[in-house]
Image (tube, rainbow, N blue to C red; front, top):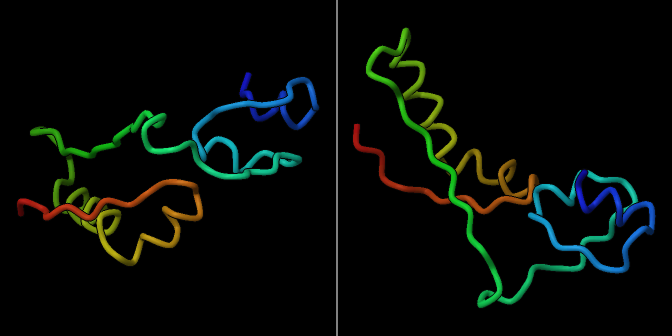
Length: 88
């Protein structure tokens, strides 16, 4: 069970969870992130397997997700975009 759901039902006074897991829960008031020294960073990555049925489409999807066009959606979901240089 998500801590955010417990919070929304007022079963706990305080809870900690990823921002992206808190934002979609009705009844939860997100008041801010923990200080940087208390944060645990979780990184997500993407890759294409060597036997991909459509590697070009995969490259385009990853390219879009790493572009500035995707930034507003990524941020709205409570995540922080990282825009690395793609190797292709």
